[in-house]
Image (cartoon, rainbow, N blue to C red):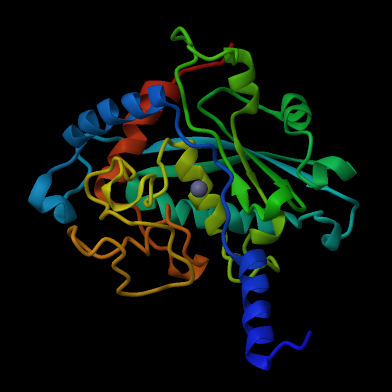
Length: 297
Ligand SMILES: [Zn+2]
């Protein structure tokens, strides 16, 4: 069979977009989590100076800055840079990116410790329960960042939403396991100065930490008529945005252009630059509800 040049070029583009498109493995919300999210999102509006038509002008009110303790765990294949053995300066740079991206949300990050583990399976992002139960540090209010060399299924990262550790649970997961699995896992080549362009400015950590604070993807579920991200000041978006498609309007019958610059979309790192006011308020509400002063089981 002979392929035309155009067909080969198209196939090559598809292959590269399969490899290089942002993919996040954070699991979708359960029906219980959706209900809790909506209740909290309504409550979070009281933390804003303006709502509804004036969302864009809204600022956080009566919200004190929260300083999050961070424990970093490097999961490498060996002691060379190409094995995923990150230089400490790169980790400090990643923390700086987090601090810059969350500063207008009055959230900041304070690095407590860096651990290095050399393990082939863990460096491949396998055995999540094993590496987390061995390495996790701190309380439910502390952020554990795991940096394996790579991840299965072309994922850039994944996180777990905050949940109540004390409430009776419908599912079978024990509070202890939820606590152990809590945290953010990110390919180490997505850190600033990493090799995974266009996702190497540290925004995967920002995006996954947004999930850790409880935020969903801006494109939500169910397209233009679905529940979206349940955040009232992010325009509806039918599907993830890739690259930096300025002016994209995937839900033309609804208000606003797609939120392609939002940290919770799938755009390139260089395209992501903001959380909306209600996203910021929501992160504080969710942290206060689920994480603040919660030691863990
Ligand atoms: Zn995500």
